[in-house]
Length: 407
Image (cartoon, rainbow, N blue to C red; front, side, top):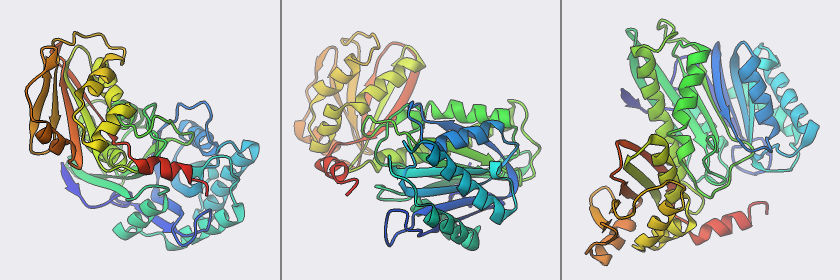
């Protein structure tokens, strides 16, 4: 696998654009386009929130029932959620506008939104924005970056990743972009994410690969415990790399899954580390658990705990908070058998073993927790399963950002 610079335009045949349409913000890009020169096989996963935004309902229909997808139109600033029938009609109008400009069917257009819930979309600006996007789309890295910037809300950085692998003697590329900084919690993927590839792969295997991978990537992050109404993650595969279509679970399929996992993991960690008000990426890795599901539940419980997140922000080696989060996770274990470590890229400090704290330096532990990337490692001594979850610290700025979100 070769890691390369790029995002949604890295794969052959994909173009992108990002423009300022004045949806809610001023003097910043707020509409994005992803377009494929060839029809794409599509797969997707969506929010588990019962209150689903209109674009989620539109996209679920397209992914499940349309023959192909060729374009994605995204706006930031307004979520088009809790907007009733009119919200769904806005999706239809947006898709029809793009379809007319690109000479494709409206049911080959995905629509996504992110921002304030409950506000109506200004459709005159949205439709003008679609025209601007169509006029300036390009296959360049810069165009992909502009698209990644245009889907940001409270994000502080745009989020992109790309890799290349060999499949059937052909070089295939997978690239992606996502946004997410707040209202992030496991229960699908809690974000907007768009992954593009020139791999030829069947719809059934693409959907299976995506759904399985989400369980260990986007479903393993949390910023604030809130699952959004708009969560959408789609993968578009246009087959332009020219490899023989992947139709069975062979070596090519697992090579593709490995590359997809790299993209998903990279983007998921970028979201967790860019949580609203965050100063550190906070990882919990559970090893030697009895089952994979136990490892997932335990690691998610720790990174989702406000007290653990606050301890990371304060660089406070209060190991009792981490033990507490493990204990109320619902997984049964013997506290006297586990080991708990604080780690960064350079040091690993044993904090707890045999049911009690070990002798360690509070100052050294605090220095480890002051790192921009912090890991709590938990050895359960119960089996061979492991899992990692990612979150961020909880700072004063999180409250400030969300107290002023609509103003």
